[in-house]
Structures are given as C-alpha cells and as structure tokens.
Amino acid sequence: MILTAIITIIAAYFIGSVNFAVLFTRAFTKKDVRDFGSGNAGSTNALRVGGKKNGILTFVCDFLKGSIAGFMGKIIFSYIMNTTGEAWAMPIYGAYICAIFCLLGHIFPLFFGFKGGKGVATGAGVFLSICPLATLIGLVVFTICFIITKTVSVSSLIATVMVVATAIIMYDKTALFVPQMIFALILLLMVVVRHKDNILRLIRGEENVFSLGGNK
Image 1 (cartoon, rainbow, N blue to C red):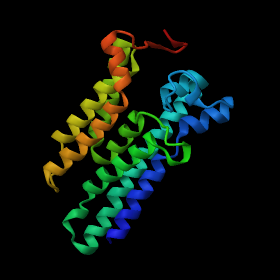
Image 2 (image 1 turned 135 degrees about the horizontal axis):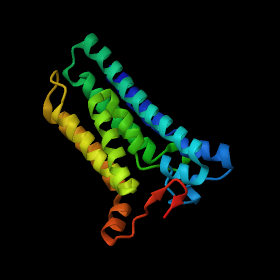
Image 3 (image 1 turned 90 degrees about the horizontal axis):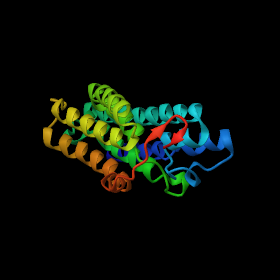
C-alpha cells in the first residue's frame, strides 16, 4: 500500500506539471507566455499576453488540476486507511501531500523545462479538497484586495495567508493537528517564495498595477 501512496503522490506531481498558461497561450497566440510580460507561466501573465479568454481558461484549469490532485490524494489515502488501518494514511494527509507535490509540479513542471507559475490558482484548487471554506474565503479576499489595490501580487499573497490560516483553524478533527499545520505552512511558504521578486518590488514601490489593458 505504500507503493500505491507513492504512485499517487507522483501522479499529483505530473498533474501539476501540465502548465495551461503555456499550452493555451501557444494555442491562441503561437507565443511562449514565459517570453513575454512578467515571464511567469500563470493565469495573470496569460491574460496579459493572450487576452481574457486565455487568462480565464488558464485560471480555471490550474484551479481544477489542484482540486483533482487534492481529491485524488484524499480518496486513495482513504482507501489505504480503510484497507490497512494505517494511521499515516489519513485522507487529509493524502490531500495535503498531493497538494504539495501538485504545487511543485506547477512551479517546476517536468514537461516545460521546470519553469512554471507561482501556484496561486493551483493552490486555491487544492484547498478545495482540504477545506472548501478556506478556498471560498481566499477567493473573496483576493477579489476585495484586487478591487482596492489593483495589484495581483498583493491580493494573491493576502488571500494565500487567509486560505492557509482558515485551513489551520478549521483543521480536520479526525487527524492530528500538527501535521496538518506543517503541511499548510509548507504550501504557504512555497507560494511566498515564488513571490519573492514581487515582494522586493513592493518594498521598493515598483510593483506593477494591473489593468485589463495590461500593466500600468
């Protein structure tokens, strides 16, 4: 059953490695999204480079692949636990571990030279399997922050903190709290580290303000 868990985790990484920003932008514009705009292979830059349809499709598919990976981990680990009774195979642990590896795949995609996105949309998707309320709160917080700041990076970081905080507070009572907290903080750290350049630009007051027409 350990082999089944390992295969599931690897599958989560492969799911994450499907980079829709690159795929859709190539399909719509014949361009590599990583060569334009911010150079990030995510939904925001896909929108800048390929337009609204490109950006929306990228966000939705990145969100869905995170959800699929998280639910896959939850279902497979539940099966393992019910079959063997192993404590390590708690469904929530499976969701978190697959979430981490899916995010790793999104950030370092095997299929695209290990150069991917920052993980916000995919991260929001994985938390749908972990704590749906956290995902809902994150989307609301992102929307409010973006309306106020017009800055995607600020909105993304604040929303990510809120998602992780909510997931920690609303942790799955059927499993131990500390492992869930550690997994959640690992996901937060991955997104924050990927935004390090944005954070430095924010400190210097040089971060881009986003508009539907592009950068201001």
